[in-house]
Figure (tube, rainbow, N blue to C red):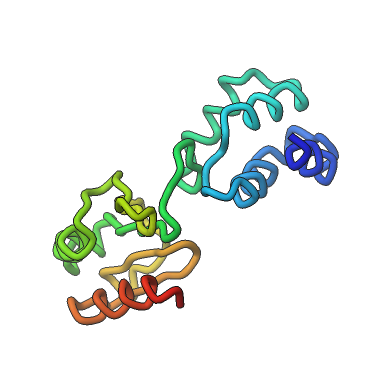
Length: 153
């Protein structure tokens, strides 16, 4: 709970900083998710209903309430990416990783999900891994990206 208190103090226990607080706590969690007791502590300290805090963290796709893989892969499902072959990219990733959207590989390395547009229409089809965007994807390029992740690059 020390981490939570420290982050809350850093942001002055201000309600308007809820998103920044939750982003920082998620990074500090170690498994890229927001533990229930941390969320409850934030709600209590900021004097917000727990439902409001959960409303925020379940609305935004960058927040997770369950642990995710080390590499969180988002496949863009926007119109431009769809037209450029996003479904093929998704199928290639499913085959390569052995998981479906919403699942994490047994080794905890990858989590696969579909995502709304993240602004990479000019390089469609695109995926996002963490904060890094990869576009103009081909089967070979996807295999190279996954291989690099597995090697820890």
